[in-house]
Length: 166
Image 1 (cartoon, rainbow, N blue to C red):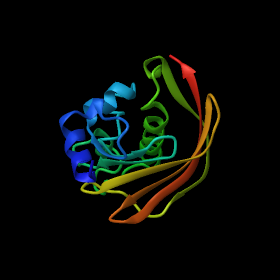
Image 2 (cartoon, helix red, strand yellow):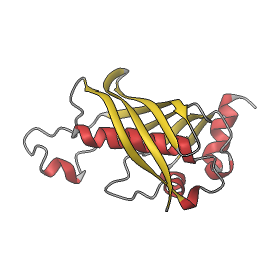
Image 3 (cartoon, helix red, strand yellow):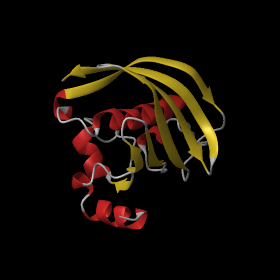
């Protein structure tokens, strides 16, 4: 099957095409994997997953998000912790998407290392969220993450997590 056929198949049946390399999974599928809901669900779509290795997802940053009412009203900037949370959610999707027992699991942060913020993220930006597994054990993982806007890195961090029962 070609990449274009994978994309079309994923759009038509996102939940049933979890093993394809190039996909476009939407927010309904994401909500089947992650427990987060608005306003804390920060991944809009998954673009690509390489099972057990990496994920590429996106977050559309819009002015109507509640955080911009106070951060900052006259100069809206997405808080760095929200970008880190979006990256962590992408990592959680990578770790949980192909597990049969995912409905009974949660992923918790256990550490953030080398977090760097390269430039502000503002309404109208589209964040590309990338996560790559560096090390994984039965219930612990370390992932390398970065967020990009217009092909430029805006945030990067190495994150550790623990998988626990809900």
